[in-house]
Image (cartoon, rainbow, N blue to C red; front, side, top):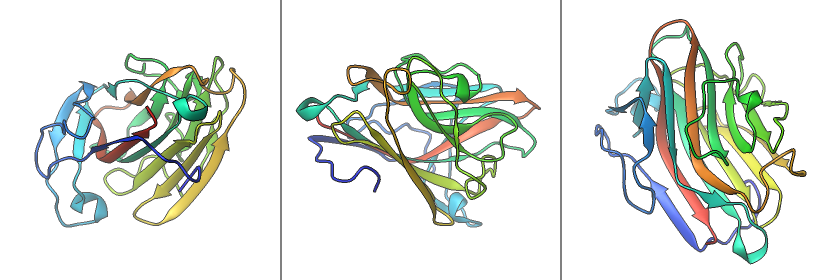
Length: 234
């Protein structure tokens, strides 16, 4: 797993109930703040995506979901490991969308913009017209995206789903890892640098801030969440 050893003092788990629209509110992760609709998903035959237990978040224009604050930190007072399992669940293949999912210093919902323009964040997503997912990060200045390549397609709706890990083992480096669950493809890397490159140790960070914005076309955009786990040392 990305980042090596990490010894959390607290762990919170988010798991949906099959076929239910109720947002999980146990294990320390309460219901997310949502702009859009919470959509029940009933497991069905067809592919691994359809069979999985998950909860849909959908909108006809701009979907956002977020919650809470954490910290990067250094030494004994900080560090974290985040695990998100998610997939795109738009209702048509023709949509042009911007998407971001990850951690941000921004507490409010993310605007419908190219994620390459975001600051004080680390996450995964894509811009309208991108074929592949990318890693996005920035400190006081937005940084160039890290294209994950053809093994990590951006818009294969209701088919591909991903495990995304962010680990900060009490340092100023953040390790990331992405696995395309239904194929096994994996990519990983490390984000490090000064205040212009990434959030800093004293920044309070929202442990999930996600957005999927319809920039062209018409239809319903969606992100399905399968699982989340947040581990911290505070």
